[in-house]
Length: 485
Image (cartoon, rainbow, N blue to C red):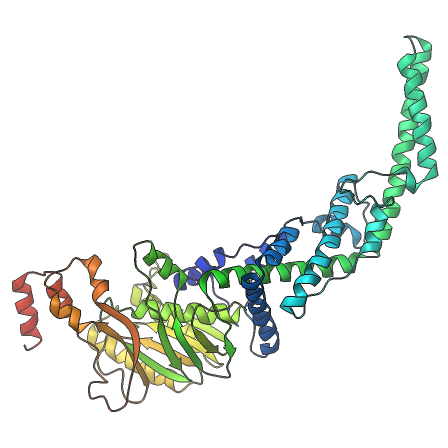
């Protein structure tokens, strides 16, 4: 099952995206907190979820007034599930405050249904419908005032009316009485009348609770529909803000054009730049990704993981177009996997994580490894990376391995490389600060074809970057000697 922890979601940028979802109701917010990816075999349910979000996005763009009217109506709902749980056996009598909450919910529902029906005529949502609860509202609004306030009305009981009249008469006489035996007697009468009033109000609230309990299933079904609609609209707002696209559900391959990460893009825009979108096509087996330091490999891998995860959760994706499958599991090793609490080195923690990945790899998984075995010596590290590539290539999963090691990206595998330094701009540059290096980088992913002679070697931009950053000339000379220049 695809089930990422918070740290994994944060690493790939999913936590950043999910934090931007802003449902209007407590029910929608709970859906976001408990968001669970769809499973393989649930493609039909996922298709419906994606289509609803896409339709809502169209509604927001084409008819913003209607869209925001729907959001405004949703914002009136409060969480009344604590009160509604009293309607389940064993039945517990609702208080005046709880009956007030339930009445407010029913009035909001009566307002929502016509607004939703109007929107739905344009949007065409599937699987989101509401149950009319006018009869339940009539229980709490016997005079059909439509007011949100609630009190135990005399319309519920002639006995209550008579008690209140008697109590009012006693209070009038009590106010006029002088101190003495008469006032004491009237005070006792008022206490008996107040007790009788409380008892009759309790009887009425018991009856109201019993009558409302007959509608309990409709309450919970409408709450589920409110949550789904609210979540759908929140996804639509996010999709419109970031120009997301509805992906196609593929069988066992990935094709994404111009995908990007909102977190990375927003961070770059704050500095006056924007993220360069990347495209990739993958199928079962291993894909090897190579590229220079600072070339964008890690960002590309996180962006792929982000969009695959959001897709499986029913969100529109951050790309120009996308076709993705559902996975049985998603496994990522990105960055330093060391743990001071377990006492493992980065390499030891990585191997422990790899063991878990291989144990789960019997199904159809998405496996992303960012520079495996970089925490050991280069000779053994290359051997580990090459062995992992061979092992994963024999599985039906889709695996991507980014590496700096030579002779891992053999012709047995699909291969991509980051485009690297822009040669024309490098030729014109003399010396740069680290902040300006991104201006020289082309972060696109380029597929390496079978007939490219240098396919097995990784790009060698490190020396160029050292020179551009003004590394000590003596050190540069020694590096060139080591490289045989």
